[in-house]
Length: 369
Image (tube, rainbow, N blue to C red; front, side, top):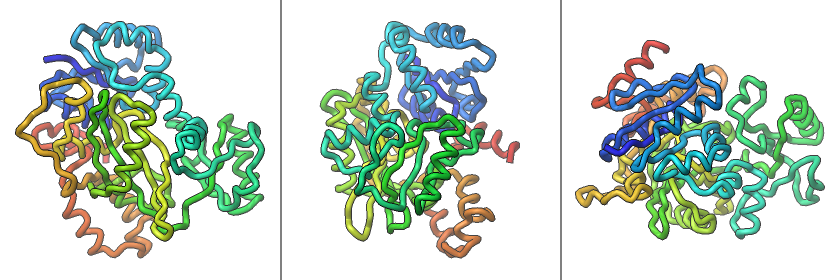
């Protein structure tokens, strides 16, 4: 079996590894941190936790070959790929990502906003303090986010995104970002509006493209948090906007377009493109969307027919926190009825960890709860 080297042992890495195995590939998972993908019965695990960066790149290069492919499943590993692109390209038949210029556009929120404006794609108005004048038309409330995604934001005690209602709050948060050495991007805030959160997962190779749409059930947009419950929901408008962005980037590989819709005005906003498999990647193989087969040029499985609805993904442990925690629990604080919550659980049929054919990642997780 041809090897697929997967950078990242997270839930995303686990979903990609399971899909690779089902597609007749041999998944090899590499990470410097422990993760559920290392527990999979189908994975060859390569833990590089004690290695220097030079030793890590050499170990990954040793996994290459004439029929080997490589894919990164987090922004951290995407940046590793950017830094070592030349060496990795020489060692692997296929790097399942677009070129570095495209990756930089997707990783940098200001670059992405500028690209959206140049490509005539709708996105929130933005401003980068200290580098450009504040637009007169940019009024409160404002949303502040790190220009580059920070996976260490908790350690820095900075929110993933925070809203400022007035000049005093804006000044406070700008000083907080500056104190931590983090560059903020300020944009018009869509929070407080009636929003729907759409995802357009996709795979593209040359002129061929597979994509579908999904909607985040929980948590709500104003929490600015990763989805814990996401259901497939066919939406042609979101699909059309996602397709336009992918084609104008001339994107190769697997990714996800994030879109917010203001249900009062009906306007859609392009928020970002994740240039890698996303957390809910398991929805793709569960709905018979052969993303890996497309990007790796594998023969299609004619027996499988893709579906556009009927699949709902859940990370149950995190979703229970969203529902019942003291801080944000939507059920605990009366924003969602208990029976409505239970009905939503009944629809769930794609799981972050559980798979009866590969039970160890789920069973191992129970030991740490």
